[in-house]
Amino acid sequence: MASYRAASSLLFTLMFALILSTHGGGIAIYWGQNGNEGTLAETCNTGDYDFVNLAFLATFGNGQTPMINLAGHCDPYSNGCTSLSDDIKTCQSKGIKVILSIGGGAGSYYLA
Image (cartoon, rainbow, N blue to C red; front, top):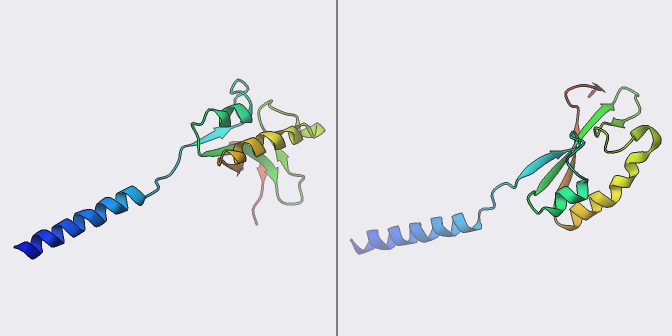
């Protein structure tokens, strides 16, 4: 009986340690498709997110010039999206992963 209790206690301790050391997934958000969502830096400064998906790289591949669609946040045709570099660095300095989402609901894209 004592060995059963010892084994049960050890199993409980190991499971408790596993639960405490498990890092679940973080919260992610798509940013870039709503003109009223604020800047990327403001989104990251909320502290609510672990991942920010920039939405969307809507044109790429098959010899096309890559083009991002950020719903009015910036104008890619005049290199206006280069100002996002500082916002991306702000997010990354807070440990937030910034990911470029490719494709989207509409666009011209090819993966070979």
